Length: 637
Image (cartoon, rainbow, N blue to C red; front, side):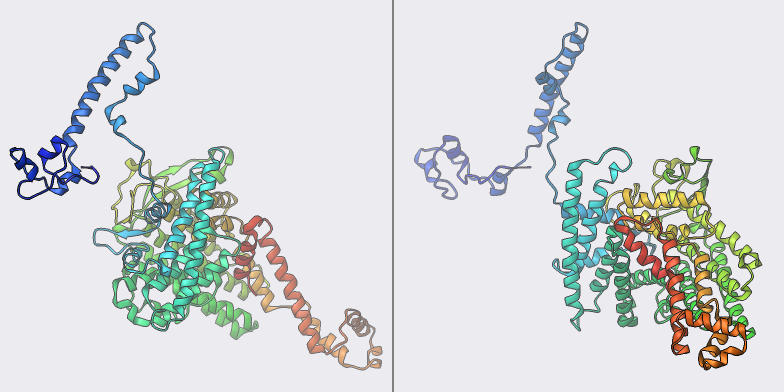
């Protein structure tokens, strides 16, 4: 149908005679005056829109005949070395090529929205409940276009599109200046939307009637996603701030939020981020693990895995607090043994959960990768060993959360063993040997899932068949997706910080984190690739520092006695006098209790500075400050 503009409403006879019709019904006076039969009036819709299908077909047939004639002319002229002119070649184009015209320009906001939906929003299919951020679709449709949710969504969408605008150039050729300019423009718009989302969220949080709504909680979760996508200098802290606010709002909303489908989905999303936040920072989940699981089961297998992760968060916080307060004694050693047995029991529960999953959850090993030539692990797509394929990203993410939890449990077990056997080397204990084997296998399982997350399987569909339990909200499901990299950041960051990872595995993981940042637009990967944390060895060092803050504490009673005695009392024993002189030379001539506090503080700060320096030795650029922030959280004393 072709729009013909504003039509003339006159009768067909007057239009043919090119005279003005008075439009009298049923016959015009011009036709009656000239004694002609008035044919009447056409429908106004037919006048405005004309069906050009048959006319287009006739033009295509004529163009096809002309093209065939010119192709024959070119074929015949090729034998006589006669070349066609550019005009002739243009005329000889296929009629379908001639019919193609430049596409209508699509606004950046619309392209960004489709890009974000096709890369991050996973919608359940076939009646399942396996999705990610699928609650955004009904909320965005129903909420105010100028509200905090729309601004947060636009910020994430524009930032993701800006980061991936130049990702196709990654490691292939120099950056196109036009693409770089377009990306910078999109990123500027993204930060403008982010600022609007923050202002709108702050305003609605002051409204006693609106701050508990689904859209507010969803907007805060999107703001946390924005921090991971952009990952500026203070991105790590901003992410934690947003997640902390989301946790507090979820607690205030209570059990009523679980009555609706969207409310339940948002609550589970907050619970997932709560697991990452608490395990990373070593803090216990607020309200306890049971509160987060009561009446909030969407998928029983995934909920069971999250229950074990939340229990691990509680146990880790309890172990850290216990080590900071207990002194070594037979009674306290038994307390630490009980904590270690609880960690071992949780590890066995996760192993049983992995073994008892239904067939639909099982992954498949489709091939084995051989050695990498020249040892270039940082640029390799696949690490030597297994390559595993899953039914969808959501199932793969649940697997890796459970595996990451096992790595944290191994750290807890070894820390408890080190505390109990100190000063004997903890690496000689049977607990360390068992944990080392388990963690090495777990690291191999996580690395075997990396190719699937990063799209290695896209061109190898003949090797496997998946069940498509979930699909993306826009675009095609078969393609390189940002969600795969987003799901991988936390497990890979945990792997790269493990004592049990080999140098080759660490190089491969850091390379994949950089690829996630540059190729998929999740810039948080740059910060994580620069971490130099080693667990549990650094935590064991920290635990020892807490348990014995001053290495010379066994001589402190003698120094204290000398400081409280008169000047003449020290002349009786040369050894004691020498010790007193050393104490006075060191400046220990104030109140002994105050001086001890100063000594403890100085020693702690010194050891803390050493740990921080080792952990951030290679951090540089804009990500350096965020690396130091993350390290401070993990190794906080």
